Length: 578
Image (cartoon, rainbow, N blue to C red; front, side, top):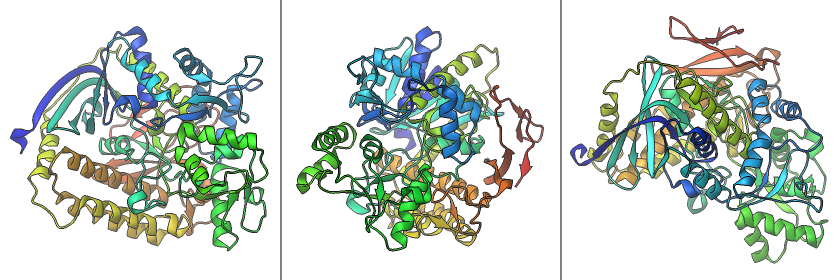
């Protein structure tokens, strides 16, 4: 009952939603001066939350010796087939090495050779012992001046008046307690969206995913519902992973230079191309045409290389090392079978997320985005998220210098009343898990999931919209007996919101620019008319698609303008209704 739900009001200057990579580094940056009161709200525990919870064994975005930041921009642009924000990528690239060195100064172990230089892995990567990278970041953030942490609090809604942020509402995941948090600026750093589609391993093993299962697209959903502009959701991300364990393949492909090989012993990767989406597409195609299963060819590596792989996976995906050891055959004796995952929406690997300027400000004034939730700049990885956390923090400090009156209202009470609704519902014949499985089945079958080889068409997408919307009445009838149930209900709610936006983006890009990532069987070719950003804004409960021209070579900060009719434009661009 609502009367039994304790409500705490908190006032702060800056609220950071999400205590992962970007959120921690942003708090650390704000704490260097410490002039503003900063609160991090994290739905887990900041010490081991986010994508780095289990650690990582390499820094995948670093400007190595002989390279310059523009090289990284060019790599990202080429891999994404041109649909990127070069201004955002350059500002990230210029900060990659600085944030890496700051982490090293705070205790991250970076491997060095006999000359004291970083050990590289490929052209853009360096090797680390990163099992403790998240506790290091958490300590940097929590011990910073004027920074406090609120663990186990799930933020569900943003408070916005006249397109200006003034706070957020959430609840404790362990007890019946809600929070109304009032802030002058908010940084969204919640990560991307997993669990939209049916996963590789259903049932008991459904948590064996590429992207963390607790990243539900909450940050996207809050922004969508608040009227923020989103970009490039249709550039989904599908990871190429070790079969069953869903462990990373890059460690093998780059670490020991293993090639992709089909079941006939043929090396096929160059046949399809080596862009990220093409590596997935080639594997999908080889399997579909009967030449699978597909592997990374490792049976030619040395025992020393095998030992290195054992250790590398213990840092981040121990299930793969355990599989090798339990099976009695390591990668030196047996090639590693690979497969694609279900699709995800994640701005750290593709360009999906909030439409932001160079300060990482969104189109809602006072709302910022960084890391996987921010769009336009793919291939960020860990250090790119750190860089965006820093840039957002600096942007927030500049924004808070403005003298403005912050308008507020009592809309937070309605949100808390919505929590009450689920507690007051009577028990339903349908479980929370069944609603989630229904959503994943719809997306898999009609919006290009694993069982359809990632392919979709216009007819299927229309059906997907209808069927996803049909789940809302079922969702609203679910009962929460405690806040853990409430958390699960809201995580489905967030995913449904992201699903509807994703479907509209997939419909709007009438081409196939990225095989597998967006395999549109109604439009199978690349079209020059879609050398553009597909953006969207939710208005009156409908997703409105906006087609924006590419920003090419424009490294000045992007300026937003708010038109009289409520639309959003920017300097130097023409908005086309689509």
